[in-house]
Length: 423
Image 1: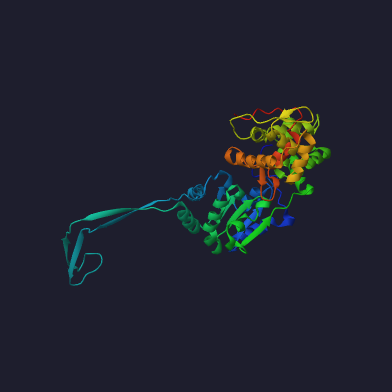
Image 2: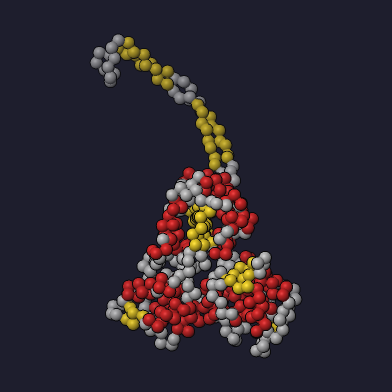
């Protein structure tokens, strides 16, 4: 079962090609001396990485995870490591003379030295003097990485490019510009509302960026995952269960894979059944959804709900249902009240949800400050990928992770109790 349904990995049996979209063909053009920076955009866990690894396997390309890069030097060192290269190079030059043998020949000489040959072989010895000189050539990680990329001719893929801060993005794109102009394949993967980052940070890339958007998954495409997978396990699943999965997977193949794996586990199916087996959800799918939610984004939700550390306790806000929680919990519960999918929420929508659940509406600047702090908390939490992206300038909140959106729908209960903010 674990080889059939592979949430978060590279499915072999249930990989959906989406042939009608021609995505693999579009992506392959990056190797055809395109001389453009290729950016693949799509929601988190929408299949960007799976698609790209299908065309550019990790054994044939240099893959860098933007989420694990804390600064620019980390990225270039990561490239060098993937190429088994070095930053500093030691060169040793050896000089000297070796012994010589002089042959003085007269008369007729045949090869080899016998029969009719008259020759005199005279050893001529010279002193065997050698000297060596060692020099250390220091290089910057950036220059060495670019040099070794060029020599290797291996495509460079930077996954989750949007995780890099704006300054790092700019420096990286400027560094890669020469490779791109020379036709070296460079591919960036990012979420949709950050698709123009490469142009914003480096104006000279205008006209030299090729966008490949990953369209939202259609129900008929997602349905192929259970349609292919369960027969491989010699199992059948009721269409009503699959319909429920399609409604709740938020157009994410990752979530669909997770649902299929979970229902296999609940039916104790670990490998292909000896006889045809019917997969059931005897207690309904709600229990399965709650379990998936609890196993995914609860940790980051709790971290955001606690807010940043501060010296004094924050003021409690009175909820219309009688509860009292601080403003960080209130903002998260307001977002959950909207039961969002993979969406962009306007600031006023969040304020409107707060108005519905609180006795008194917080000041506008308070809500904006909370959302800004949540973005900072995510950036400082290396154990979790960002799930929210607050655009202060546009006053928009982007929910970037389908598992977090799913948790807001199924993991936040009316009896939620969140610990106090750390003092």
